[in-house]
Length: 329
Figure 1 (cartoon, rainbow, N blue to C red):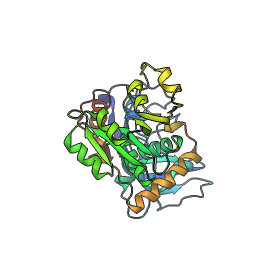
Figure 2 (figure 1 turned 45 degrees about the horizontal axis):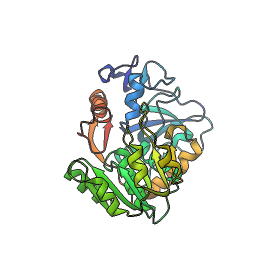
Figure 3 (figure 1 turned 180 degrees about the horizontal axis):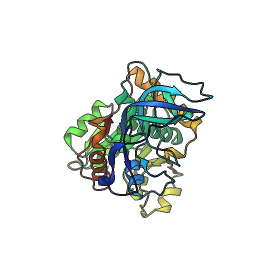
Figure 4 (figure 1 turned 90 degrees about the vertical axis):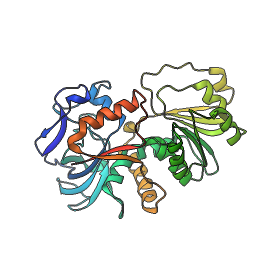
């Protein structure tokens, strides 16, 4: 089969697109014929060696995928050949990644693709969707809550906007251009502002005079003094990025408002937790309440260029992406 892989951790240019042995499904595994995959920042960190992970070498990159069951290994009961499936959490903890024509996936990391949902959409929503759903659960978001997501058109941010609306919250966000602001509003944001041209702090205070209930931070360098100031009494802040960040933490502003700080990484969640999140995601996809933001679709042979583009936007903040990069074998 063809696959995108590295022989050693390194830069995006170290990704090779070439022949790789087709895996055989072991007991409890499913061989999936891959139809689409998606790029995530964590993929680039693992490929570069910035996140130390026990990975096989050579190593197929990628976590997200969607496709069709080719055949199943011994003991598999949840799926059968011909079923359409999607999932994430590949390329982690010794597992090979998903950027290939076929992948052998543990049955517990597979979810049925809803009728009418494309493989591109299923792959694009995988990691970001599970991340958003787990984080909103941890933040105890309730109908009527006011949520601010700091960056509402990226992979996770755009998903948080839509899920929070589906859960009955009132949502505000920011983006870096008027076009992205318009996109955020199309996704369902009640308010969206261009952080390059507007006084966002003033707009947030107008949006939520008593403070927001949940602040979802997508940036790698959080400003706690700012976010704590905008949270209402017993508000909650969600962190899911900024592995090396060491920001100033205003302790007084935190504990005197009874605030809660939630930090999490989706790949720490169990199969049971992720399956529950996937069930909600599937329901929202099927009813049209959730639609992944796909910036572009590329052939899998361009995996190196896709990794570089993701890295440029995650680390260099070039602003040339609005959503996910999807690749197709």
